[in-house]
Structures are given as C-alpha cells and as structure tokens.
Image 1 (tube, rainbow, N blue to C red):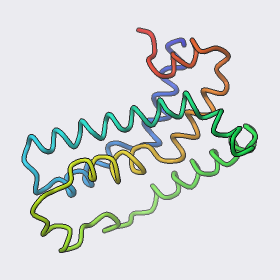
Image 2 (image 1 turned 60 degrees about the horizontal axis):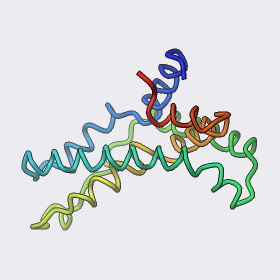
Image 3 (image 1 turned 135 degrees about the vertical axis):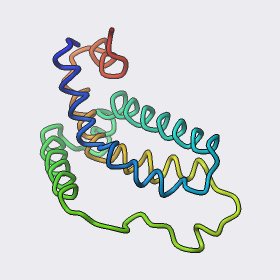
Amino acid sequence: MDTNSFIGIAALLFSLSNPIGVIPIVLSLTRDLTTGQKTMVIAAAASAVAGLLILSVLTGRQLLGFFNVGLDDFRIAGGLLALFVAFEMFQAKYGGFMQTREETSRTETDIHGIAITPLAFPLLVGPAEMSIMITLSSDAPTWMHKGGLIAPPS
C-alpha cells in the first residue's frame, strides 16, 4: 500500500467514524467514572474498533458469500449507507444518547458495556465503516495487500 492510498483510506475512515463528534458522548457516558476507569473505557473501545475493522477485512468477503450478496450490490448498499450517515451528521439532534435517571443512579458502572456498545459499535465503527473495509479488502488482490489494510507498512 502506498502513502497516497493510506492517507485516502485513513481520511475516509476518519470522516465516517467522526471521532471528534463522539467526544461529547464519551464525556457524557463517563462523567461519573474515575480517571482509571475512563482510561479503561477508551482502551477497550479502541481495541473493539480495531477488532471490528480487522474482522471486516479478513472475513467480509466470506460473509457476503454466505448471504449470497454480490460485491457490486454491497458496494451500492454501502455507498447509500455512507450517504445516509453523512446526512445524519448534518442534522443537529440533541439528547439522542442521554442517560436516564435509572442509568445514572447505578452504583457500579459496566465499563465494557459502555466501551463496546455504544462507543465502539455503532458510534465509531458502524455498518458504513465495515462496508468500506469489506469493499477495500475485496479489491485487494493478495493477502499481503489485505495485510496492508490491517497494518500499513511504515
């Protein structure tokens, strides 16, 4: 993978996942946690994001084959999904991820429950990001190129 394609893929995934827009949600979900617990939530979410993207690269084509979905059909659906995500970002919606009083009054916080759902999936890695990774891995001719999607060479 050359530098230009790496920058293009990184910019595409960054714009789709919108990690800057997730910051207020992270702060809201972790406001009652200690600094150590917040670090654990962020580390678990980052690991889950990496795992979901790697899983999409390695098993995406087989999953499409299992459901008998063609790659061109999937590209159209993934493009439409990315378009819908982009339109959702333009609409300012307040309070979509606010916790109820029962959720905030819990004495013990489920760190993995916050990190995996909703942070890692679907906020940071949703269907649009997974479809992009499946499409890119399907276009990769060899396992070495797929490895470049997972861990780009330095």
